[in-house]
Amino acid sequence: MSRRYVGSLRIRTDLNSGGNRQPANIARTYALSGRPAEARKVLRELEDSAKEHYVPAMYIAGIYAALGEKGQSLMWIQKAYDERSDYMVYLKTEPSVDMFRSNKRFQALLTRIAREPQP
Image (cartoon, rainbow, N blue to C red; front, side, top):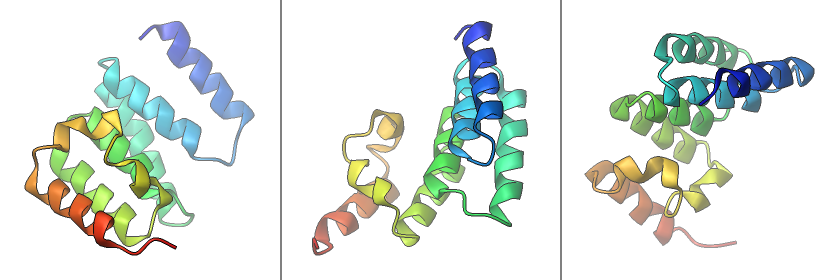
């Protein structure tokens, strides 16, 4: 990804202060563009923020997935499930979690989601 794209994300984040979706997108972009140190810096900021404010677990899971840290990502996906994240409905088809399709823990989670009664 281009530096210009990453820079424009950073500017956009400044304009939308107070949210945590843009920092998560920036961290994923850094990770996917070969800038893991910068991704980890934003990730640490989000994890610190999560101690005082709600940060969706799937945001953090996505950053760890982009960094290639499958164990950490799965842990945060499980946390998203535990917090009843509405993102769970997308897990079966979401391309960003393709790396987990053959993982037994991930398969078990998909099975649990499928068994839950629908409202």
